[in-house]
Image (tube, rainbow, N blue to C red; front, side, top):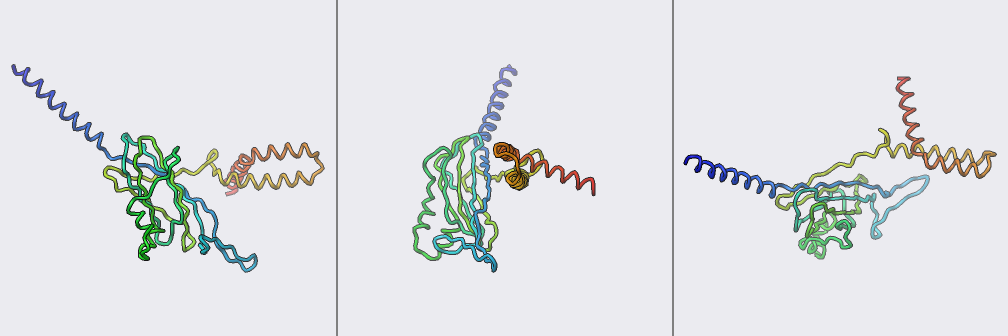
Length: 247
């Protein structure tokens, strides 16, 4: 008799625990990972010898221009709806132009109703908000989907603009995922390419003034162009080896 009562009670308790754990699994915090990359476009400068260079936006001088690419992805276990995505910059910067869309979609994301009112307002007190933030509404962000954002920005002090990404949606947490530097067998890919390009230009120039036939020069230049990055990588490795031996 005792066993007949104990088994249903234990089953009930186990069921309650499983239900509790399942609810916590379903309602767990969704982490939205995003990456951000800055791409320098140009800056204004004054030089007494070579003259001045001016970067303009709507006819007005700006210190510099940066394209900032942000990629936001839902890598969690549940679909999200009605997300409000908030973008802002530091006080010394301004967001000039912005575009946001869901990957593989032809439609751009719309601004939130509140931010749209700010954009359409003539209130001079709201001018700073127009250029220091962007608020987008994401109707649906299913598991595995991605949002692509492009910002054209400037910094009044000539520095690199800072962009902040936030979302106040219940149960959602934003997390910046830093992009790893591009490397080629342990060395900087950018530096390897730069050194290889210089080597290729010098080598091609020497070939052009030599007495070698044009066809041979063309083939050598073609091969140098293909392997320029690896030549740069090898140059860095040799330099490090020599410095290590001499130090």
